[in-house]
Image (cartoon, rainbow, N blue to C red; front, side, top):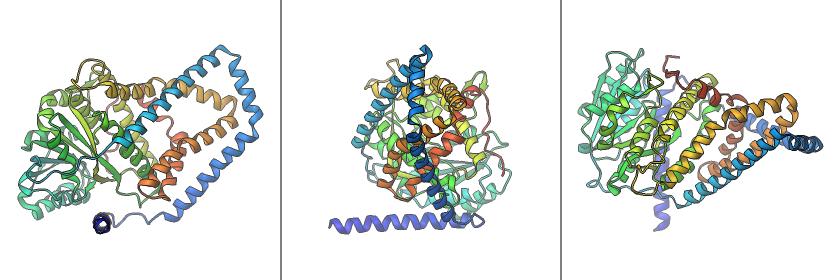
Length: 473
């Protein structure tokens, strides 16, 4: 019997994978060829570079000893060493807690059709083209009672053929989907706001228009609302849809798996997932309506907030004392940037939102905002806040290190990547694919040498508005 169930589970997964592949293939007929050979070259080159770092560490051992001796003889060096050591101890302890919590995490299994809440799925779209059609089709094919599922899609003033593909989906799905157009491009937050006001479900589900869901995604996503009456929001599990088209998506897939399947699993045991992703999230209707006026009118430094709508909504629901959970079994596949410029623009947007929402969270996280335990929430906040506070001190130290000891910096950076990226590799290999897991090393190299400037720049420009990636390519 057990073997039969395992075969059925595998068959279901294969059917889902084939379904997603066919959808994506039809959408991206003009896409790039599979960069498998290039990927192997990148992985091989990355490993050789990291091994070079190990060699350099051994070769410059005496220089490292002299460097440490010089640092001990200066007051500033001793202060920095103590701070770095304290942070290292905190991060090691924090990681140990996350690891323990990860092993105690369990997804909530799907409830019966009768127990499922009525849901409104909101799909805002801007310059998405044919992809929005595939998104709506995948949602319509969900294993979810039709009478309990309302699909809304809002065109946010697109300049391409997005509205045509939404109309085509409407023609095929009929009354199962309602489509509408904003009078002009007003931003994702306003498109969602329109959906929140139009929707009649007990639970609102937000899905990005470049995402695809599996048949079981929606019912798994909303099942926690039936089991936990204080559940205010649920985060879905995001994987990369276009990871066969370019190298950056392959790297991001490994990063996403760690961010969602490890970090958010642990956060969920504290009932305090810090961000429900725009690509797939669910919110209890009452919790949304309670903070909706504040959310739509949110400002930062006197300007209207037009980014970070998902993190802001999560923050406001946490502030209400509600639980925010993660469902690892509710999977959505989403498109991510394939080029460096689009990637850093996305990270800048996320970075600015992170600064804003950590400031907002600081105002309530140490109050009695929840009847149940608040320790985990506070610990998660402290970890996030320390990253922001220490960004500039570590940037200054890094630049000084580069100027005074370039080879020592290079070798220590490479060995640090080799050590710290081993866990993401093992984690991804265990849960998904052994070969793909080595992109964790490549991603760490890219982040360390090509994206290190994102955090300090995002902090310095946190007051700036703009989506940055919402233009036609």
